Image (cartoon, rainbow, N blue to C red; front, top):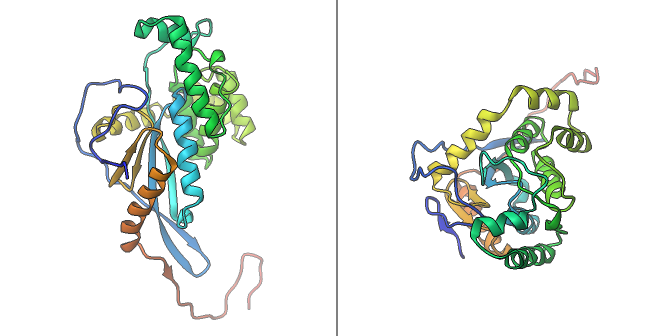
Length: 278
């Protein structure tokens, strides 16, 4: 199993903005309690640091999802998306292609940069993703991350993450543009008036910064980066089998101290929300 110790990460898609490294006051992970009829159970958290313009983050999402779908304990796994800016401070430039940017940044020819993009597109196709990287351009992702936090507060974080990745990599949309973000929000059922207010007043920027600080504290150097119960980590868009094995190991250890509690209920006269008392 190609997992890595929690505080050691390899570069996956880009470098962290800060040179800060090493663990510093890492916040312990919290679990969510799920209540069903006659049952109380906690959920194990998987935290995923990624950026919405990272091609391997979308590929890694699909590979992790494939593993989770086949995992017997998937109903007791909670996924939380964490913000990571590959190039903080980047100015969105709709008139410049990613190929041109890569060629300039890494000192390669346009043909070499295009060949790199073609390889990534082929890798994405293998997991069912339709990349159109010729439509992509340098984009600042702070607003997109703020929107994801807004969606999290309204129970739609995964839907927002998926929609933003699809918008950028498949549709070539500007995910830094407020009109685009509002349209995406409307499509996934968010309150667009409240989202507009949040985008305009700077809401959730502190949440984005907190996620990035946590990444620095955990030693994350690139994304995607998957953390299982703050005990095990997988760096990069690994094979589905790697995610499956890590889920098995982490959940097996976690479940030992988080059993499902079956309530022994003594029945008696009650009144229900429907107005029935019996």
